[in-house]
Amino acid sequence: MRFKYFTGTGADLERAINGWLEEFEPDVSQVVQTVTPDGALTVGFLFEESFRGQEKRFSLEHGMVRETPAIPPGSIPDKPITVPVEPGTPVSEPND
Image (cartoon, rainbow, N blue to C red; front, side, top):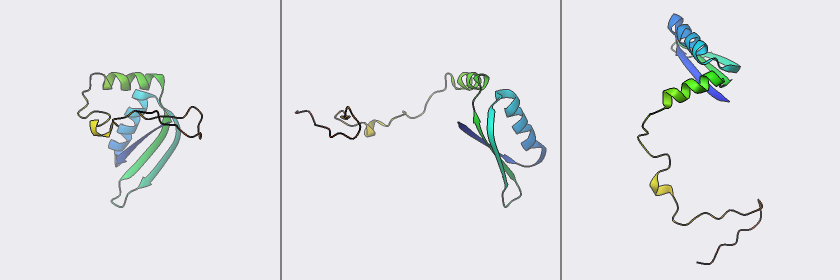
């Protein structure tokens, strides 16, 4: 499931939502809307991505350069993490 929301007023908001629905053809499960204190409308969609939408998203993301690495180098442990074979069983550390 994915989430997408739009905020705005009037015809601009309607055009943005309709354009997204036409272009990506999502399988919408739930729609919620709320009015913000300044009078703008926020519309949120909970949806599953269609095959067409996924292909369009992949083509848009293709070739995008990531500014920062997905995992910061400082967060990678020096020693490998030992995972138990069966969940909940104690882990015996190998001798160094």
